[in-house]
Image (cartoon, rainbow, N blue to C red; front, side):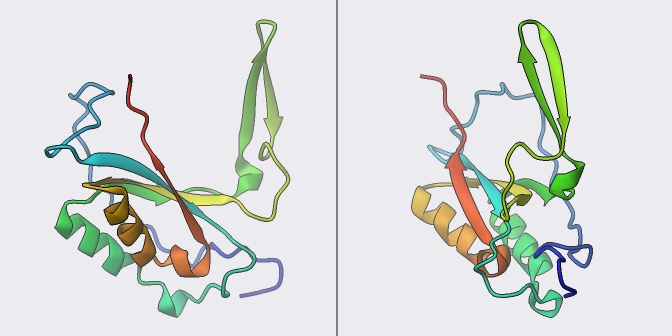
Length: 145
């Protein structure tokens, strides 16, 4: 990895995405007898071990999670310098180039998973290669009250 290169770089490969039917209600998140959907934010982390493309087993992770029926979708995101921040204030739309916050950590991708419990979601996240080379934040997808 060259100096200044982010932990997630062009050498990270895209993986196939399992498509989900959009015929469901957008609030139909409790599935499979009480399973819950979680969003995994795949993040860089300067304190993690350096990214090594030879040890990036993302295809194996995707294959295992698709085989288990846990992974709904996921993909990489472009670099934060390609972000646009959008706000609406006093009826005016305001846009700013770049990320909202200046930080050394950034979201490099996402996965939506469907698990029976938070423990299973943690186990799934712990097997993702970026748990080693970055960090993963897991959030339950909001359910209407």
